[in-house]
Image: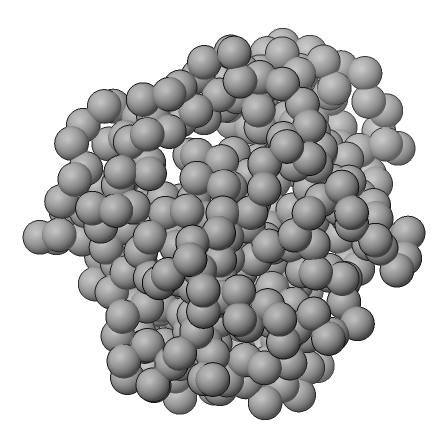
Amino acid sequence: MKTMAIVCEYNPFHNGHAYQISQHRTGYGVDCVIAVMSGNFVQRGAPAICDKWTRAEMALSGGCDLVLELPTVFATQSAERFAFGAVQLIDRLGLVDYLSFGSECGDIGILKQAACALLKPDFNEQVSVILKSGISYPAAREQAMSDFLGKEYGDLLSEPNNLLGIEYLKSLMLLNSKIEPVTLTRTVSHHAASNNENYCSASHLRTLTEQGKDISSFIPADSLAVLNNAIKTGKAPADISKLDSIITYLLRTKSEDELRMLPDVSEGIEKRFIEAAKSENTFISISESVKTKRYTKTRIDRTLIHMLLGINKDIANSTPEYFRVLAANSVGTAFLKTIKKNDYPVITKTANAIFTSKNAEDMFNIDCRATDIYAMLYPDNKYNYAGLDFINSPIIKTSR
Protein backbone atom coordinates (compact mmCIF):
# COMPACT_ATOMS: atom_id res chain seq x y z
CA MET A 1 0.00 0.00 0.00
CA LYS A 2 1.50 3.34 -1.09
CA THR A 3 0.70 6.10 1.37
CA MET A 4 0.82 9.89 1.19
CA ALA A 5 0.53 12.31 4.10
CA ILE A 6 -0.67 15.92 3.99
CA VAL A 7 -0.22 18.41 6.82
CA CYS A 8 -3.32 20.59 6.79
CA GLU A 9 -5.85 22.75 8.54
CA TYR A 10 -8.70 22.42 6.03
CA ASN A 11 -10.14 25.65 7.36
CA PRO A 12 -12.35 24.89 5.50
CA PHE A 13 -11.74 22.07 3.00
CA HIS A 14 -12.15 23.34 -0.59
CA ASN A 15 -11.66 22.48 -4.26
CA GLY A 16 -7.96 23.30 -4.14
CA HIS A 17 -7.45 20.69 -1.43
CA ALA A 18 -9.45 18.12 -3.38
CA TYR A 19 -7.35 18.89 -6.49
CA GLN A 20 -4.10 18.37 -4.58
CA ILE A 21 -5.29 15.01 -3.26
CA SER A 22 -6.52 13.86 -6.67
CA GLN A 23 -3.41 14.99 -8.59
CA HIS A 24 -0.91 13.45 -6.22
CA ARG A 25 -2.95 10.30 -5.61
CA THR A 26 -3.05 9.64 -9.36
CA GLY A 27 0.41 10.95 -10.16
CA TYR A 28 2.20 8.83 -7.55
CA GLY A 29 -0.07 5.78 -7.49
CA VAL A 30 -1.16 6.42 -3.92
CA ASP A 31 -3.54 3.99 -2.21
CA CYS A 32 -4.03 5.80 1.12
CA VAL A 33 -4.10 9.55 1.81
CA ILE A 34 -3.49 10.54 5.43
CA ALA A 35 -4.33 14.04 6.61
CA VAL A 36 -2.54 15.28 9.73
CA MET A 37 -4.92 18.10 10.57
CA SER A 38 -4.95 20.86 13.15
CA GLY A 39 -7.66 20.53 15.77
CA ASN A 40 -9.95 23.31 16.96
CA PHE A 41 -7.34 26.10 16.96
CA VAL A 42 -5.08 26.86 14.01
CA GLN A 43 -1.60 28.13 13.26
CA ARG A 44 -2.49 31.78 12.72
CA GLY A 45 -3.68 32.01 16.32
CA ALA A 46 -7.43 31.66 15.95
CA PRO A 47 -10.27 29.16 16.34
CA ALA A 48 -11.01 27.17 13.18
CA ILE A 49 -14.17 28.13 11.30
CA CYS A 50 -15.78 24.83 12.33
CA ASP A 51 -14.79 22.13 14.79
CA LYS A 52 -12.29 19.37 14.11
CA TRP A 53 -14.89 16.62 13.59
CA THR A 54 -16.75 18.69 10.99
CA ARG A 55 -13.51 19.47 9.15
CA ALA A 56 -12.36 15.85 9.40
CA GLU A 57 -15.63 14.67 7.85
CA MET A 58 -15.26 17.29 5.09
CA ALA A 59 -11.76 15.93 4.41
CA LEU A 60 -13.00 12.35 4.30
CA SER A 61 -15.76 13.36 1.88
CA GLY A 62 -13.21 15.24 -0.23
CA GLY A 63 -10.74 12.41 -0.81
CA CYS A 64 -8.76 11.66 2.37
CA ASP A 65 -8.74 8.13 3.77
CA LEU A 66 -7.56 8.85 7.31
CA VAL A 67 -7.55 12.04 9.38
CA LEU A 68 -5.25 12.27 12.41
CA GLU A 69 -5.24 15.25 14.74
CA LEU A 70 -2.08 17.32 14.98
CA PRO A 71 -1.84 18.03 18.73
CA THR A 72 -2.87 21.58 19.62
CA VAL A 73 0.57 22.21 21.11
CA PHE A 74 2.03 22.08 17.57
CA ALA A 75 -0.98 23.31 15.61
CA THR A 76 -0.76 26.73 17.25
CA GLN A 77 2.99 27.30 16.89
CA SER A 78 5.20 29.24 14.50
CA ALA A 79 5.74 27.72 11.04
CA GLU A 80 8.97 26.08 12.20
CA ARG A 81 7.49 24.31 15.23
CA PHE A 82 4.22 23.58 13.45
CA ALA A 83 6.06 21.84 10.61
CA PHE A 84 8.53 19.96 12.78
CA GLY A 85 5.81 18.59 15.08
CA ALA A 86 3.70 17.47 12.11
CA VAL A 87 6.60 15.88 10.22
CA GLN A 88 7.77 14.07 13.36
CA LEU A 89 4.29 12.59 13.72
CA ILE A 90 4.18 11.55 10.06
CA ASP A 91 7.67 10.06 10.15
CA ARG A 92 6.74 8.12 13.29
CA LEU A 93 3.94 6.38 11.38
CA GLY A 94 6.75 4.46 9.69
CA LEU A 95 4.83 3.57 6.51
CA VAL A 96 4.43 6.88 4.68
CA ASP A 97 5.95 7.12 1.20
CA TYR A 98 5.19 10.75 0.28
CA LEU A 99 4.65 14.07 2.01
CA SER A 100 2.47 16.27 -0.21
CA PHE A 101 2.13 20.04 0.12
CA GLY A 102 1.05 22.99 -1.96
CA SER A 103 3.42 25.87 -2.64
CA GLU A 104 3.44 29.12 -4.58
CA CYS A 105 6.80 28.11 -6.07
CA GLY A 106 5.93 24.59 -7.21
CA ASP A 107 9.60 23.63 -7.62
CA ILE A 108 10.78 21.06 -5.07
CA GLY A 109 14.44 21.57 -6.04
CA ILE A 110 14.40 25.31 -5.33
CA LEU A 111 12.54 24.77 -2.05
CA LYS A 112 15.13 22.16 -0.99
CA GLN A 113 17.95 24.65 -1.63
CA ALA A 114 16.22 27.14 0.67
CA ALA A 115 15.71 24.44 3.33
CA CYS A 116 19.42 23.57 3.22
CA ALA A 117 20.27 27.24 3.77
CA LEU A 118 18.09 27.34 6.89
CA LEU A 119 20.09 24.46 8.34
CA LYS A 120 23.44 26.22 8.06
CA PRO A 121 24.72 27.35 11.50
CA ASP A 122 25.65 30.80 10.21
CA PHE A 123 22.12 31.38 8.86
CA ASN A 124 20.67 31.90 12.34
CA GLU A 125 23.67 34.03 13.23
CA GLN A 126 22.85 36.27 10.28
CA VAL A 127 19.20 36.44 11.35
CA SER A 128 20.27 37.53 14.86
CA VAL A 129 22.40 40.32 13.40
CA ILE A 130 19.56 41.54 11.18
CA LEU A 131 17.06 41.44 14.07
CA LYS A 132 19.07 44.12 15.85
CA SER A 133 17.82 46.59 13.25
CA GLY A 134 14.35 46.25 14.80
CA ILE A 135 12.53 44.41 12.01
CA SER A 136 10.28 41.39 12.56
CA TYR A 137 11.63 37.84 12.72
CA PRO A 138 9.95 36.80 9.42
CA ALA A 139 11.45 39.85 7.67
CA ALA A 140 14.87 39.10 9.16
CA ARG A 141 14.73 35.54 7.81
CA GLU A 142 13.75 36.80 4.36
CA GLN A 143 16.70 39.19 4.38
CA ALA A 144 19.10 36.48 5.58
CA MET A 145 17.88 34.14 2.83
CA SER A 146 18.41 36.89 0.26
CA ASP A 147 21.95 37.40 1.57
CA PHE A 148 22.69 33.66 1.31
CA LEU A 149 21.07 32.68 -1.99
CA GLY A 150 19.74 35.81 -3.67
CA LYS A 151 16.60 37.93 -3.50
CA GLU A 152 14.45 35.41 -5.38
CA TYR A 153 15.07 32.93 -2.56
CA GLY A 154 14.33 35.54 0.08
CA ASP A 155 11.04 36.22 -1.68
CA LEU A 156 10.14 32.53 -1.27
CA LEU A 157 9.80 33.09 2.47
CA SER A 158 7.26 35.87 1.98
CA GLU A 159 4.70 33.36 0.70
CA PRO A 160 3.06 31.27 3.45
CA ASN A 161 2.88 27.95 1.61
CA ASN A 162 6.45 28.23 0.35
CA LEU A 163 7.51 28.94 3.92
CA LEU A 164 5.68 25.92 5.33
CA GLY A 165 6.97 23.72 2.49
CA ILE A 166 10.54 24.76 3.22
CA GLU A 167 10.00 23.99 6.90
CA TYR A 168 8.60 20.54 6.03
CA LEU A 169 11.70 19.87 3.92
CA LYS A 170 13.99 21.09 6.68
CA SER A 171 12.21 18.82 9.16
CA LEU A 172 12.57 15.80 6.88
CA MET A 173 16.30 16.55 6.62
CA LEU A 174 16.72 16.92 10.38
CA LEU A 175 14.96 13.60 10.94
CA ASN A 176 16.90 11.90 8.14
CA SER A 177 13.50 10.72 6.95
CA LYS A 178 13.03 8.44 3.94
CA ILE A 179 9.71 10.09 3.08
CA GLU A 180 9.75 11.71 -0.38
CA PRO A 181 8.40 15.29 -0.47
CA VAL A 182 6.22 16.33 -3.43
CA THR A 183 4.64 19.71 -4.13
CA LEU A 184 1.85 21.15 -6.25
CA THR A 185 1.70 24.77 -7.44
CA ARG A 186 -1.05 26.85 -5.83
CA THR A 187 -3.16 28.76 -8.32
CA VAL A 188 -4.83 31.17 -5.85
CA SER A 189 -3.03 33.44 -3.41
CA HIS A 190 -3.31 32.44 0.24
CA HIS A 191 -5.02 35.70 1.19
CA ALA A 192 -6.68 36.42 -2.16
CA ALA A 193 -9.91 38.38 -1.80
CA SER A 194 -11.02 37.30 -5.26
CA ASN A 195 -12.02 34.06 -6.93
CA ASN A 196 -10.42 32.05 -9.73
CA GLU A 197 -13.14 30.05 -11.48
CA ASN A 198 -13.85 27.24 -8.98
CA TYR A 199 -10.92 28.02 -6.70
CA CYS A 200 -10.78 30.38 -3.76
CA SER A 201 -8.37 30.82 -0.84
CA ALA A 202 -9.43 29.43 2.54
CA SER A 203 -9.08 32.94 3.98
CA HIS A 204 -11.57 34.38 1.49
CA LEU A 205 -13.86 31.38 1.95
CA ARG A 206 -14.02 32.07 5.69
CA THR A 207 -14.98 35.68 4.96
CA LEU A 208 -17.68 34.62 2.50
CA THR A 209 -19.03 32.05 4.97
CA GLU A 210 -19.19 34.57 7.81
CA GLN A 211 -21.06 36.94 5.46
CA GLY A 212 -23.55 34.21 4.57
CA LYS A 213 -22.53 34.26 0.89
CA ASP A 214 -22.86 31.36 -1.55
CA ILE A 215 -19.68 29.24 -1.53
CA SER A 216 -21.06 26.22 -3.38
CA SER A 217 -18.76 26.59 -6.41
CA PHE A 218 -15.61 26.46 -4.26
CA ILE A 219 -16.17 23.34 -2.14
CA PRO A 220 -16.84 19.74 -3.30
CA ALA A 221 -20.55 18.97 -2.97
CA ASP A 222 -20.24 16.24 -0.33
CA SER A 223 -17.87 18.34 1.79
CA LEU A 224 -20.12 21.38 1.41
CA ALA A 225 -23.09 19.37 2.71
CA VAL A 226 -21.12 18.65 5.91
CA LEU A 227 -20.22 22.32 6.39
CA ASN A 228 -23.77 23.50 5.62
CA ASN A 229 -25.13 21.10 8.21
CA ALA A 230 -22.79 22.54 10.84
CA ILE A 231 -23.91 26.07 9.93
CA LYS A 232 -27.59 25.09 9.91
CA THR A 233 -27.41 23.45 13.33
CA GLY A 234 -25.58 26.39 14.92
CA LYS A 235 -22.10 24.85 15.18
CA ALA A 236 -20.39 27.15 12.67
CA PRO A 237 -18.85 29.57 12.06
CA ALA A 238 -17.03 29.90 15.39
CA ASP A 239 -17.51 33.28 17.08
CA ILE A 240 -14.11 34.57 18.26
CA SER A 241 -15.76 37.54 20.01
CA LYS A 242 -16.90 35.11 22.71
CA LEU A 243 -13.25 34.99 23.83
CA ASP A 244 -13.11 38.72 24.52
CA SER A 245 -13.96 38.66 28.23
CA ILE A 246 -11.89 35.53 28.87
CA ILE A 247 -8.74 36.95 27.24
CA THR A 248 -9.16 40.29 29.00
CA TYR A 249 -9.64 38.58 32.37
CA LEU A 250 -6.58 36.37 31.90
CA LEU A 251 -4.32 39.27 30.95
CA ARG A 252 -5.58 41.37 33.85
CA THR A 253 -4.78 38.58 36.32
CA LYS A 254 -1.49 37.22 34.90
CA SER A 255 1.90 38.36 36.18
CA GLU A 256 4.81 39.21 33.92
CA ASP A 257 6.57 36.05 35.11
CA GLU A 258 3.58 33.91 34.08
CA LEU A 259 3.45 35.50 30.62
CA ARG A 260 7.17 34.93 30.14
CA MET A 261 6.50 31.18 30.36
CA LEU A 262 4.53 31.31 27.09
CA PRO A 263 6.18 30.40 23.75
CA ASP A 264 7.66 33.34 21.83
CA VAL A 265 7.30 35.77 24.74
CA SER A 266 10.62 37.56 25.21
CA GLU A 267 12.34 40.93 25.28
CA GLY A 268 9.70 42.52 27.49
CA ILE A 269 6.69 41.93 25.20
CA GLU A 270 4.83 40.66 28.28
CA LYS A 271 4.64 44.26 29.54
CA ARG A 272 2.81 45.32 26.38
CA PHE A 273 0.18 42.61 26.92
CA ILE A 274 -0.48 43.72 30.48
CA GLU A 275 -0.68 47.39 29.50
CA ALA A 276 -2.99 46.66 26.56
CA ALA A 277 -5.47 44.80 28.76
CA LYS A 278 -5.82 47.81 31.04
CA SER A 279 -7.61 49.78 28.33
CA GLU A 280 -8.66 47.22 25.72
CA ASN A 281 -11.25 44.49 26.23
CA THR A 282 -11.47 42.43 23.04
CA PHE A 283 -9.23 39.78 21.51
CA ILE A 284 -8.83 41.84 18.34
CA SER A 285 -8.22 45.22 19.98
CA ILE A 286 -5.68 43.77 22.43
CA SER A 287 -3.81 42.13 19.56
CA GLU A 288 -3.82 45.35 17.55
CA SER A 289 -2.55 47.29 20.56
CA VAL A 290 0.32 44.89 21.30
CA LYS A 291 1.61 44.29 17.77
CA THR A 292 4.61 46.26 16.54
CA LYS A 293 6.84 46.28 13.49
CA ARG A 294 8.96 43.69 15.30
CA TYR A 295 6.10 41.57 16.66
CA THR A 296 3.56 40.58 14.00
CA LYS A 297 -0.16 40.31 14.67
CA THR A 298 -0.08 36.56 13.98
CA ARG A 299 2.62 36.09 16.61
CA ILE A 300 0.58 38.13 19.10
CA ASP A 301 -2.60 36.17 18.31
CA ARG A 302 -0.76 32.89 18.87
CA THR A 303 0.48 34.12 22.23
CA LEU A 304 -3.07 34.95 23.31
CA ILE A 305 -4.18 31.44 22.30
CA HIS A 306 -1.23 29.89 24.18
CA MET A 307 -2.24 31.80 27.30
CA LEU A 308 -5.87 30.74 26.83
CA LEU A 309 -4.99 27.06 26.46
CA GLY A 310 -2.14 26.89 28.98
CA ILE A 311 0.63 26.09 26.49
CA ASN A 312 4.04 26.89 27.94
CA LYS A 313 7.57 26.92 26.49
CA ASP A 314 8.44 23.45 27.81
CA ILE A 315 5.61 21.56 26.17
CA ALA A 316 5.89 23.65 22.99
CA ASN A 317 9.43 22.33 22.54
CA SER A 318 8.50 18.68 23.14
CA THR A 319 7.60 16.00 20.60
CA PRO A 320 4.27 14.33 19.68
CA GLU A 321 3.71 11.02 21.45
CA TYR A 322 0.38 9.68 20.20
CA PHE A 323 -1.84 9.34 17.13
CA ARG A 324 -5.39 10.67 17.58
CA VAL A 325 -7.91 9.41 15.02
CA LEU A 326 -10.59 11.87 13.92
CA ALA A 327 -11.96 10.10 10.83
CA ALA A 328 -11.30 7.12 8.55
CA ASN A 329 -12.82 5.14 5.72
CA SER A 330 -12.20 1.46 4.93
CA VAL A 331 -8.75 2.19 3.46
CA GLY A 332 -7.81 4.36 6.42
CA THR A 333 -9.06 1.74 8.85
CA ALA A 334 -6.85 -0.87 7.17
CA PHE A 335 -3.87 1.45 7.53
CA LEU A 336 -4.69 1.98 11.21
CA LYS A 337 -4.33 -1.74 11.82
CA THR A 338 -0.71 -1.52 10.66
CA ILE A 339 0.25 1.44 12.86
CA LYS A 340 -1.31 -0.09 15.97
CA LYS A 341 1.85 -2.21 16.08
CA ASN A 342 3.76 1.05 16.63
CA ASP A 343 4.82 1.88 20.18
CA TYR A 344 2.99 5.23 19.95
CA PRO A 345 -0.55 5.02 21.38
CA VAL A 346 -3.31 5.15 18.75
CA ILE A 347 -6.28 6.92 20.31
CA THR A 348 -9.65 6.02 18.87
CA LYS A 349 -11.78 5.76 22.02
CA THR A 350 -10.70 8.69 24.18
CA ALA A 351 -11.85 7.25 27.48
CA ASN A 352 -9.52 4.27 26.97
CA ALA A 353 -6.45 6.33 26.09
CA ILE A 354 -3.26 5.12 27.79
CA PHE A 355 -0.17 7.35 27.77
CA THR A 356 3.45 6.35 28.12
CA SER A 357 4.63 9.64 29.66
CA LYS A 358 3.39 12.65 31.61
CA ASN A 359 4.29 14.85 28.65
CA ALA A 360 1.93 12.88 26.39
CA GLU A 361 -0.86 13.10 28.96
CA ASP A 362 -0.33 16.86 29.38
CA MET A 363 -0.37 17.30 25.59
CA PHE A 364 -3.62 15.36 25.29
CA ASN A 365 -5.19 17.35 28.14
CA ILE A 366 -4.43 20.53 26.19
CA ASP A 367 -6.28 19.05 23.19
CA CYS A 368 -9.28 18.40 25.41
CA ARG A 369 -9.08 21.87 26.96
CA ALA A 370 -9.00 23.37 23.46
CA THR A 371 -12.18 21.48 22.59
CA ASP A 372 -13.93 22.58 25.79
CA ILE A 373 -13.09 26.22 25.11
CA TYR A 374 -13.94 25.94 21.42
CA ALA A 375 -17.41 24.63 22.36
CA MET A 376 -18.04 28.02 23.96
CA LEU A 377 -17.63 29.62 20.52
CA TYR A 378 -20.48 27.75 18.78
CA PRO A 379 -23.09 30.26 17.53
CA ASP A 380 -25.84 28.29 19.27
CA ASN A 381 -25.24 28.24 23.02
CA LYS A 382 -27.06 24.95 23.46
CA TYR A 383 -23.87 23.18 22.30
CA ASN A 384 -21.60 25.01 24.74
CA TYR A 385 -20.88 22.06 27.02
CA ALA A 386 -17.59 20.44 27.97
CA GLY A 387 -16.31 16.91 27.42
CA LEU A 388 -16.93 16.58 23.68
CA ASP A 389 -13.63 14.72 23.28
CA PHE A 390 -15.16 12.00 25.46
CA ILE A 391 -18.55 12.10 23.72
CA ASN A 392 -17.73 12.34 20.01
CA SER A 393 -16.34 9.21 18.38
CA PRO A 394 -14.12 9.15 15.27
CA ILE A 395 -16.11 9.42 12.04
CA ILE A 396 -15.90 6.03 10.34
CA LYS A 397 -17.16 5.37 6.80
CA THR A 398 -17.28 1.83 5.48
CA SER A 399 -16.27 2.80 1.94
CA ARG A 400 -14.08 5.37 0.22
